[in-house]
Image (cartoon, rainbow over all chains, first blue to last red; front, side, top):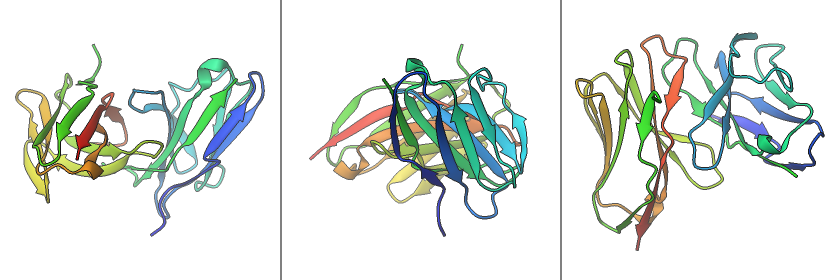
Length: 113
Length: 111
């Protein structure tokens, strides 16, 4: 069974540029999560989807971050414009609805110069 | 106060040692407890998953939950250099879907 797929794996951009990350969850998983992980920290939730509905986006900085999951399968997270403090690893995870387990992708390491 | 507290280490042990990793938490409503292993430049990998109190064993790994003390542990027996990674604890409510993570403990097993 294929795991959670993320691309790109690495991205280096200059501040004020836009950037987008893509995630394809495990087949059949209704719930999709985007997390941000800073060095030496645990993952922090940005947004959670149940199918195509964003059910928890309270921690998403909406002035510059946006996300979509149009068909309830894959998802895109965008930052526009990027700031130096956005440098982090962006992790996508998926799980079953009302489930108690989640499975992570390899992450996208973003560096903003 | 953070929901989940975890000593970041780093922890360095000789090969073959028994390793004890711990987390404390403040919310008594947490019912599911997880340990993830994260290698450098990789995503977290689910290692152990426990419901409510008690022990769960899987090979060299034992997860222990003490809900009365709001304390969870992961024990690694006969530690190997391949166990060198960051270990994250996580927990969630019975309804699931909202996960709370510790900051991770960095472990190095020296051959």
